[in-house]
Structures are given as structure tokens and as C-alpha cells.
Amino acid sequence: MANKTPNRVKPTDTELKEKLVNLNRVAKVTKGGRTFSFAAIVVVGDGKGTVGHGLGKARDVSESIAKAVDEAKKNLIKVPIYKGTIPHEQKGKYGAGKVLIKPAADGTGVIAGGAMRAVLEIAGVQNVLAKSQGSSNPHNVVKATIDALAKLRSPIDIARQRGITLEKLFNG
Image (cartoon, rainbow, N blue to C red; front, side, top):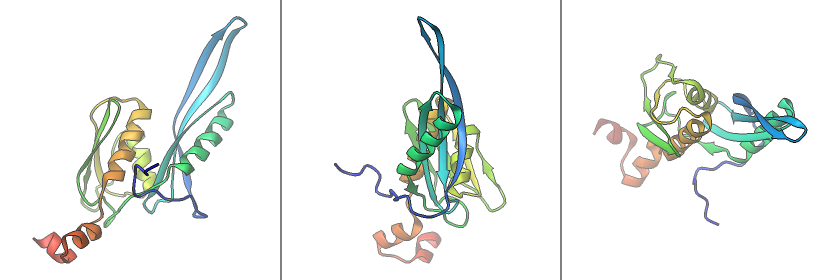
């Protein structure tokens, strides 16, 4: 099976931070009444360009979060971060969720809403402008943001591909 994202990372011994994006209580109506369970969306990252997301479902809150963290560690990708921001503008899409991320000047901070903010902060991006344009469903927004980050290409790779220096790439 071909790997969909070329910049996948194996979970190593690096210190991964985790952030809960959304916790949803779900009720299943049975003959004996309502049965409650929990669905947790979690993002994990090292703050240096590695990020992943996961969904965990269980009867207990802590168990669903633990399952989500384990799932997130299996879906890690590497994000090129250049001078604290992303190298170029990029759009991402997953289902009805559409996102736009733009590089920002130093000191801008992470200007993003809800689920996008969690993903970008845990990835280690310090300055970025982001906009969620489609669905506000946290599942789709997180996956669309990860899609946009996975599509990013580092300036070093682009310069190498074109056979030019980094200075020539940025100065024209």
C-alpha cells in the first residue's frame, strides 16, 4: 500500500505534548434506558514541527482520551517551519471542512480559531494567520488543518528541486 503523506514520522522517544480539542458525550438509547459514551479528539506534537491527530471512543472520559492519544501517535507528520512560521500559503480540505493558512510576520502570534489553533500551536508554529472557511465541525477542521500542513514544502526542498540557492529563491 502506498503511503498517502510522504512526510510521515514514526513515534519516537521525543517528548510529545497532547491537547484535547473536543470531547463529545454520545447517548445510545436502548431498552434499558440511555447509555452514555465519550468521543475525544486529541492532537499531539513536539512543538518542533511534528503533529498528529486521533479520535478515541469509550464509556469513560479518561479512557477515550488515552485511546485518542494512542491513535494520534500513529498519525504523526512532519511540518516544515521556517523562522517560526509556515513557508507559504496553503489550503487544506477534508469533507466539508476547508482551511486557509498563511505565513505571518514575527510577533503576530497564532491567529486561528478553536480546533485549528490547537493543531498549529502543538505543531510549533508561532506566527500564522488561519481561517476556517467551511464546516466548523472539529473533526473536519482538524483533519483539514493537518491536510494543509502536510501539503507544505520547505524552502530548502524547493531550492534543491529547482537547482538554485536559498538566497536566489527568496530574492528572485
